[in-house]
Image (cartoon, rainbow, N blue to C red; front, side, top):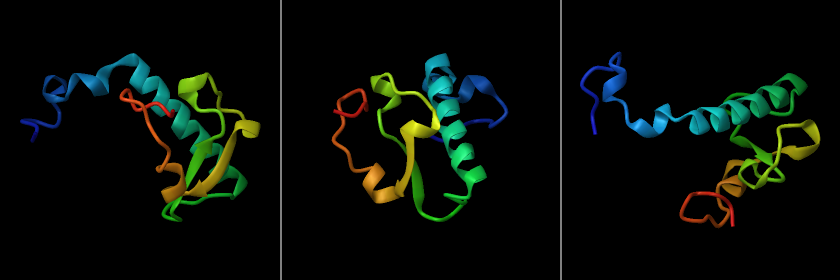
Length: 86
């Protein structure tokens, strides 16, 4: 669905405005930045930062819980209807 005006918050889907969604995205971004600082990943390298224990299952963004994996491996897990990992 095309947006009427990209500066108009009312035209964005409600999903993107939920606090829980923003928090999960912030945690994923934090994990990516941590790995970039260590030189493990870089922009455009085709790698994802994987949470060993998923955030949806109570995992946290600490170095011992994240790893760099190829994008096709991180995006291939079986998922529930709510998009959490089975």
